[in-house]
Image (tube, rainbow, N blue to C red; front, side, top):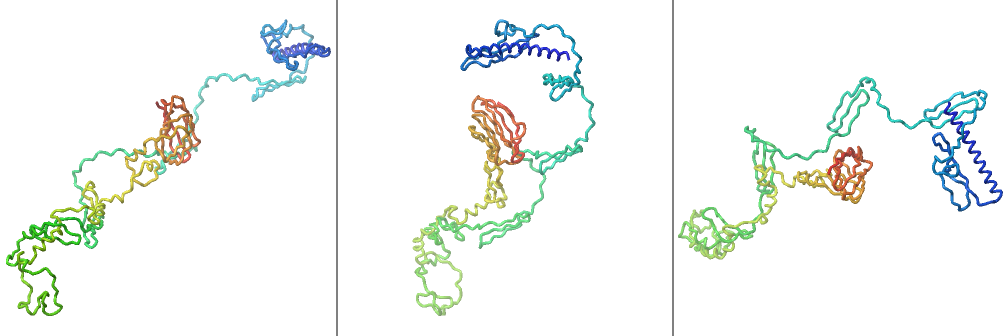
Length: 516
């Protein structure tokens, strides 16, 4: 209570002094106004400042003044001989304490006080009507105190009671008697790239059981198809294996028996032209009868009935034949066949060469039949090999990235798909998930990694961010990116790789690795 009483005394003394000064100024100014003397002056606005035990007046502003007049300086102190710039030179407006007055009658006194911890305000009540309310008496917050001693450990909770993993969905479910059980999302990572082929195993020393193998085959001359049967279920039918009739040059290499004929090409009509020199070299078994003895080569008619007339062929039942029977086996020499050599010499151009070839195009359907066959590299079961037309096409790099095809994925195309793409660094980047697996983004200013499109849930992508110069660039993220998003700045020598895992089509979990 002593402190409060002192403050009240100070305020009362100060107020009395101020009132005296202001009343004096007011009188002076009023006199000047009344007399109409001089221009309008300035009135100071004063505040009481503390200087240790002293109390001084400081001019914080001026009021009044004529139109266009310059306001005097502020913040000066009132001294004994005028305005002072230093507080030490100001006069102490709190004079010496006067003599003690007589004690007053005892008042009712303070009747109580309450403190509001939420506002820091202390409210005093008094039967004398002197009650008042303070301002916030709380001081600034002090430094944190030292940690207290550890409390006694609580009782053990029920804890987790078990967990299960669903291999079909990749979800782990945790059970807890405390009600803290939860289920994760799909924790399976994306499929890794195929590993390299292992080395071939050693040959077995034990012979495996013999298969049923092919049990037979039939050829249909009318269709040219060969049908194979098998106890292993491997039977199949070929296409038409007959080649087209040849129309090119060829060589007759055998006529039944003997050394054969050589000569001109086989004509398109199928006739064979004989080489006279080759025919002349043939020896007939019966040299007494020569082909020339047979007469002319003109065709003869056959009598419709009865004996043959002149110029007709004599039949076996001609009544003029003394022995009605088939001719016995016999031979004729070339000399006994009339004009045979002349006719042969004239037709040499109709023979194929003794040795000749045909192109595949000149043999009808040969190319089709060959297309249905396996190559020698496909092994001894070439007839069982699938034709190329029945195999799925090889996936492109774009189809590998988007996983939108049933085509065959080869190691070559997977490697092609892993080649980093390079989006423009001159604008923000909204990744098309289906168009890349890895990307290198060289930015030219601060950029935004916008929300992605065509997201494939459960898959992973990476984006390496670099700056085009040594100036630091920052990356901010769309609202679909989750996790502890990095705030690192990149340059052309300090990079960050962002690893993006698609929890769902609209939730992308981000992790990062800084490197240089």
